[in-house]
Length: 317
Image (cartoon, rainbow, N blue to C red; front, side, top):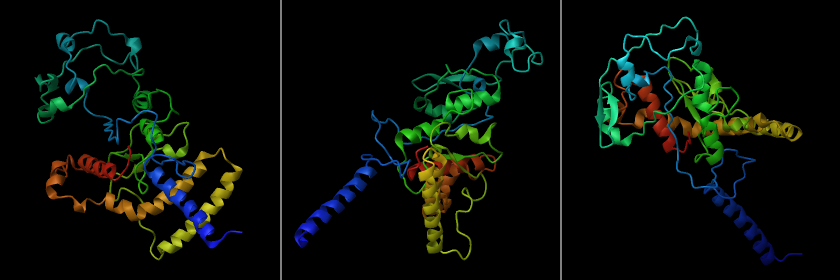
C-alpha cells in the first residue's frame, strides 16, 4: 500500500525520468532509434559537419574547361594522343584519337593561386573559399557505373549512397521534414534514377526522399477536400496498429518500420513542410541573387534556395 505522499513521489520521479529521457534524446543522448530511426545522435568522434548541400550536376561542363587546365592536352591539340588505347575506351573502335585543348583561358586567382577558367569570372573572386580536388578518378568510363561510384563509392548498384551514410551516422535535427532530400533537375533524373540515392543494404528509412522539380515540390502535401485533420489522424492510427502487428511477426522487414515512420512524417509535414518550400517570405533581392529572375538559371536557383531553407530547418542532407 502507498500513501498519497509516496504515490506522488514515485509517480513524480517516473514522469521526471520520462521528461529527462525526452530532453536527452533531443540533445543526441539516450537515443531510441527503434521508434525513430532518424533521431539525432552523437557519433564516436565529434562531427565536423552539421548539414550537407551536395550539388551533383550531372551532365555539367568538363572539368578541363572549368578548374583543371591540361598543358599537355594543349601541346597535342589536333594531334594523335601517344598513350591512347582503343581497348580502354567505351565503344571501342568508334572513338577518334585526336586531342582537343580547352578553348578557354585559365588564370590564377586568390592567395591560393587556384587556376580557374574565364568561364567563371565571378566565382574566381572567391577562389580562397574553394577546395578543388584534381586527383579524383573513376574505375569505369561508362556513365552508369561512374555515377554509382560518385554517389556511393562503388561502381556496383546496391551500396548505400552518401546521404544515407550521413543520416545513418548523425540522424536529423528536425522531426517534421525528411533527413535526406533529393532535389531533381527539371529535365529529369540522372542515369539509374532512384538507385543513386538508395539506402542499399541499410534500413529503408535512410533512402533519399525526392522532391518534384516543378510545381509544388512535395506531391499531395495538402489532404483531400473534406478530410479533416482528426479524421486523417484516426486513419493513421489504425494503419499504424495494423502495421505494428505485422512488424512483430516480421521483425527483419525494415521497409515496414520505415513505412510507419514515413506515414507519421508525412502527417507532420502537412503542417511544417508547406512553410519550408514556400518562397513568398524571401525578398526579391535574395531571389534575384539565386537567379530566379533569369529563365536560364531559374530552375537551378530555385533548387539551391530550397536546399538552403531545408538545411536551416534541420534537414541533414
